[in-house]
Image 1: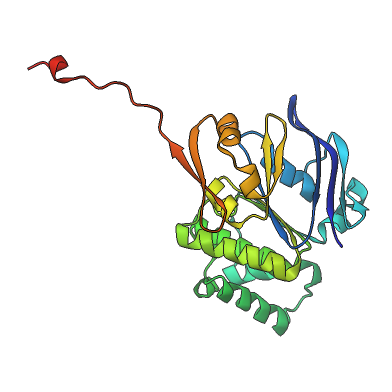
Image 2: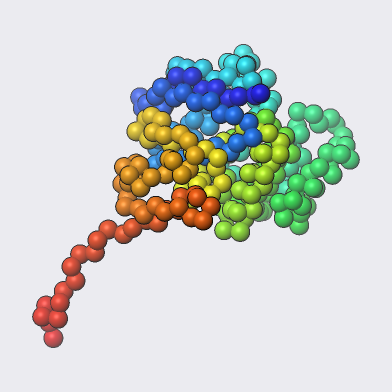
Length: 269
């Protein structure tokens, strides 16, 4: 079984410690959502898992193989990575961008199988009508869906997504997360996504990874992790947390008490 192992990981940017002493085991067939306040190292952790940011200390292992500068190409061969920045100035169509998901196996000529697989992904995501559109002319949300199609076509063993729904409307947020959840189980992927929407994370993630104050604050099923006390401590907001009909936590933020309003005697005429 391919397991992603994170041992005593320490991430540092400049003179700032982002993550200290992180230990995790992530198993296939499960969607892991990384949550936490801004500046707690969520994106940095994904970059480290992709081999883009070298840890100060610690070790990463995927199905028994360590990540090192010498083995970076082999490490990334099994990874699909979708960064947060979706700006694409390439003179390519949406279909061509999706086909690049098979870059490691493409030759000078595209096979009919590659094209059919790319079209199938676009169709499944409901964006087949964008196939011949230049990707630089697409909206931010459309580019996100196209890039998501690219990582799906790659058929990775480890899938890393940094805020994949940030530019999507509600319909496409649900569509992307449904595809991600379903394919993670069917393809037996290890999927890791940074999400800011805690309700979306609770609805779709099998396991939440909570980062805060430079350390792992909690890891486990949403119903165990998303308590009002933990959310209020990390995010400094008041919340009401209740379980829905499926036993999943649903969060509602609460406004601070309003200042006393002037009474009739205080109103000048």
